[in-house]
Length: 65
Image (cartoon, rainbow, N blue to C red; front, side, top):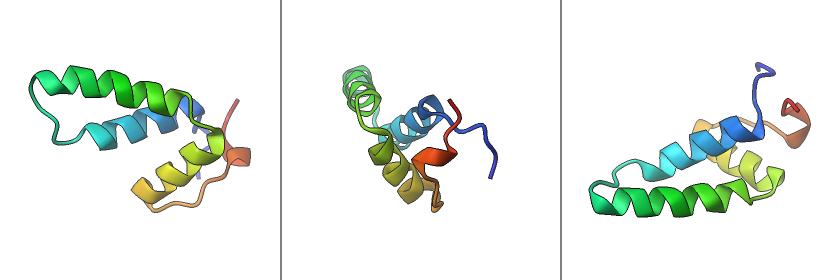
């Protein structure tokens, strides 16, 4: 596993996954809400969700600073 994973990479991956299929005017509203939610999530939560999306098993300790 590469050591290029950061909280920011996890957040972008999760937000992208959750935005899939949202179109139109609702897109902007949902994007802001979902991004804010995951920016304030703990690193443990981010790792859990990222692991679900990508079928991996990363931990907080593997995140680059």
